[in-house]
Image (cartoon, rainbow, N blue to C red; front, top):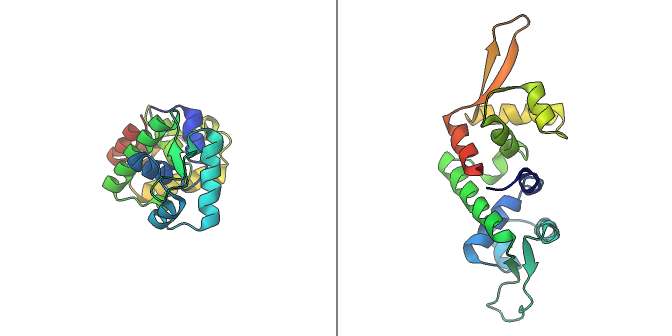
Length: 176
């Protein structure tokens, strides 16, 4: 399991999870191979790689130079993160969710809702610094993929409560 700080760092970039998953499956890759697999622009890939290097999860291969050696390899700290990313990508594939279809807050929302149903304000407080708009859009997006359900508490005024569906619980289980 990864901690909340690591999860927030992973979801801060759209391509960090798939990139770490690919690096974990191959024990390192070359820049051109990563670019071809993910279909990224060179600048987007370079920015993502730099973010992973700053996190300490990958490093440039000091023995690079031979055409068959990978340019980027996982560090000791990055190996369990890559394992998590591989499980997360497998779960996304099983649920039929492509890489770019969920917002960056989807995984933290699923993690927060895995324990119990919550009100919007409780979610927003737990996921600070998420903006209300970003959280609202994330919840709507997750509802379209049948990951989150919304119910109304029978009060006046009615209070919306958000919880995970069975599909959402399988996504949250992959986080743990």
